[in-house]
Structure formats: C-alpha cells, structure tokens
View (cartoon, one colour):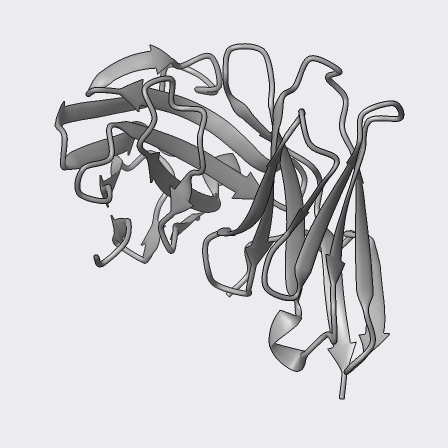
Length: 111
Length: 115
C-alpha cells in the first residue's frame, strides 16, 4: 500500500552497513523530537525520541543526535538490516504543542 | 494492547458521497489526533482532541470535514461531500500526556479513494 511520496530523498545502503538519516528542523523553540519509521501500508511507528536538553540518545541499534546550534537531527542505524527498509520521518514539537513532521527519507537496504 | 484501531482500512467512494472514518485509540490514552498523508503534502495534522475535547482544528481543510469524539474510546472523521482531492491515507494517533505532546502511536490508516 502506498503511504508516502514518490519524490522522497532516498538512501541506499548495503546490508550490514551503518545508515545515517538526516533532518533539519525549523523551530529553534522546539524542545522535543521524535523519529518515526513507516513501512509500506502501515502507520508511522515510534523509534526513538530526544529532548532538547540532550544531544545524544541511544536505543537498540539506533542513535539520535541533536545539534541545536544548526537545528539538525540525525538517526543512525547500526548494522542495517533488510527489515529497516522504510521511510523515516523526524518530527518536532512546535508552537501549540503540535507535532510537525519532516518530509521523510526513504531507506533502501540492499542484500 | 491492540494498538490504535482504524476502520475501514480501505474506502472507495464517488464524489459527493459522505465518508466516515473511525478510530479507537489505545485504552487509557487521553489525546487523539487525525492526520492526512498525501504524496504532495506528506503528513498533515487535521485535528486533535484532549480528553474528548477538540483543542486545535486549524488543520481541517474546510467545512466539508468534521470530527467528533463522543467518548474516550471512539472518534470519527467525516467528509461530506467528498471530492477527488480528498483521496489520501488518513491516520489516527493517540497518546497519553496531559499536554498531548508526548509520543503518539499511530493506527494502520484508512486509504480513501474518491472517484
């Protein structure tokens, strides 16, 4: 099922390599950020979050880095697997406490 | 927990017809969100409820769209009359934080096609 656009930036990696997905956010007042993973035909799935008082947070095989100076987020996936193939969205809490989603990056993992 | 439940999963209708999308949030969650996802615009927030009360509906495209949450376990998004440009995937999400700012859990979505 379709759920995302055809013109997303795409990152293609070899299975087993590390992946880095980047995101620029717009609101310097945002204090909470989330990475979501969306597989075809499914809703976005929470991966990891980070508060603005942190610059790094680690989960299982994933790490999120936050650089508030340049308003940049990144998601690092270690030892990328075919099951990681999906579209990844960053989201920020903006004014009014609403989530605003970035445009998404498509990750393709080559076996 | 079954997660957020949405129905129907797919809806095909003709222009001018009324469409009703349904959502059951995760039990215990007190915030509910309706989103629309299209190729052109990505994920857009339409409306969100906190404790069954609509807090922000500024994302609702026009008067043809309406949403209700009669109780903590059920919400509807209605489009009347529907138009081809309403074709999209509609997601419902829920969360539990007093301010509604914390992690949102998404349902599987309803793919709407208006002919």
